[in-house]
Image (tube, rainbow, N blue to C red; front, side, top):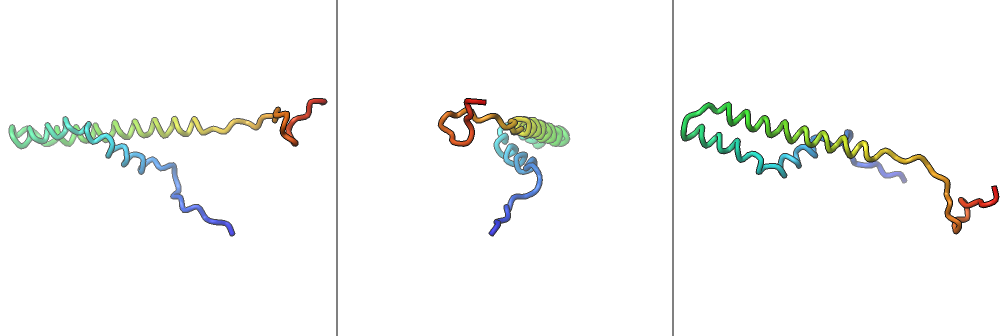
Length: 95
């Protein structure tokens, strides 16, 4: 009986992005300071929104770069000749 893999299609970019957004929450501190400045000093709320958008774009770029690096590192090597003298199938010294 063949078991079907219950793995979603795709490369998992969006799940990795969500995890990275959670791990990088401390980088939203400038945005929250701008939100506090909006409440106290009545500056535009768009500074807060812009800072959050820049944070999301930065995390997305970082996630995309790491996803690409993982993809490049997973290229399989071509098969090599077995040179193990203890192997019963691969070693042939008298060619």
